[in-house]
Length: 546
Image (cartoon, rainbow, N blue to C red; front, side, top):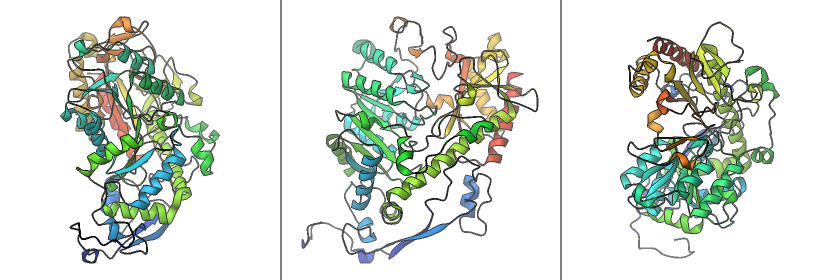
């Protein structure tokens, strides 16, 4: 098709003249619409008025920028070169790889931002990360295979793999996500006969803004996991939609002005955690990226970065399933990124988004502190530099200075680790302090379900923890002797300092002591966050007094 002078009468392609769209135009926000400094966001700014999208702004609860500045972009039906962004190509039948200018942009972007170890890393466009993951499952897994996952994980990834007969194999987590020592032990002690399956050969994880915990994996941990993957021949699938939402440690309001900001692109990019691609000298990493969190989820455009062999396998599945992303979405994103912004302006946009979500994260935790007495867990480092564990109990006074207390005290209602990336706060409610738990008159699972229903009945929806659990009802995973000093409960490792036991008390590993909830700070206004935490506080007050 691209060979000059070729006449093609082979394909049943409609003539572009019969496409009713002569051009597509849009008004887009300026690339520097959002400040890169840590300052008050536009969370409570008034939404646009008298506009056709009033209903949209009201639904998502996100006001327009206080100084909204827009610019025009337009995609014509025809442009001089076949490789130019044009509707005659974007809206036509095309290859599953996507249109050429967008392929080229994301390829250059990937190599510049994620700096893959292998220069041969290939790119193929997808209709988002769920589509990419489904293709991977079809290409690399067989029915009855095990899938290495974090003990709490993204449910859609599990829902995608289970119909194919792929079963999750949970690996314990800590403050950075998947534990490398736990991974090593799971693989080293694998018993095919006892497990009823061969040792897993593929791993799925979300290393930045881990969903649901918000954990960020360090370069050291990634290297450790990669070395284990090499040892046991594991394919690593790195699902990273929150990569550019690396907010850093939470700090109390009085200490936020101490933060520094890197304005130039190269300096800012150097502050971001590296991808697994950077350490992938064997070509066993498949990285999933998406425009869902940086442009719009409805665009349904993402891409896979992998070795040519793996990228081709993903492409072949796409050719007989979803094929290429929508031409409308591809053409508009291409026009914005390739012909309007370019790399530097897109990077500046991403930096602004990072700061906006940092403010949102802080506002939710501030709202928690306004409705509860919040204090550091006994094992947490100096809170002023960014606490790792915060605990909450009934508010005793109108003033709260983020004090100190005993996390395991009988008055603690819940605890959480302030997320360093992503869109969520992962809350652990201390059912152990509920009267019926102490009296053994009510099943802990029932208590968790009752709490979730009561919160919903009070007009607040948050994500229930069981939705993210990767543990199967009948699984038997590990034995105590495999982890001296740690505790194994129902086959899951509960270490001395992990995301579910930050205080590190070996005697306190009964998972039934806690209920878990994921609270999103991505789309609510500041006033809505405050109202939500008031509801949460009132429900918990009644719950713990039942």
